[in-house]
Image 1: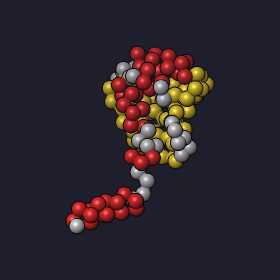
Image 2: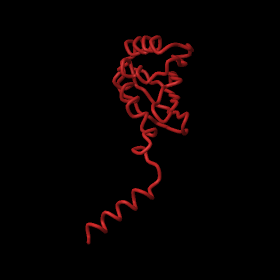
Image 3: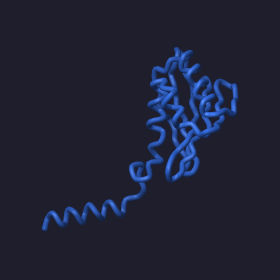
Image 4: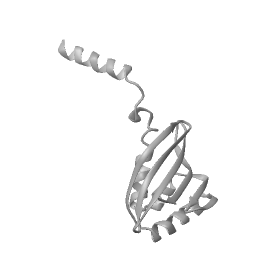
Length: 133
């Protein structure tokens, strides 16, 4: 009888709980992106890029393809080796979410702004902006 009550209680909690990052997956989108930025992993980061995106690197704005953006990020990470990255603010809701992060790299501090378009099946970085703090 106790097992049935526990099971019923768990089912009730599960069914009445609001949406969480584990259920819709979209709240958590910045976790892997942040990990790749901190690691300077431009290859894995570029997998998150939309086919065409806006990349603003230190004031130089480019509308570019995923491959062009990958090379720009490779050059940036080569010049400014990342030491630490943290998300300091997240907001928005589907289909467009954004995050602001702080990046310590190459002895300097940068603000990173990410705009991510989310759908039921995937998420892509539509805009990435890096500016000096």
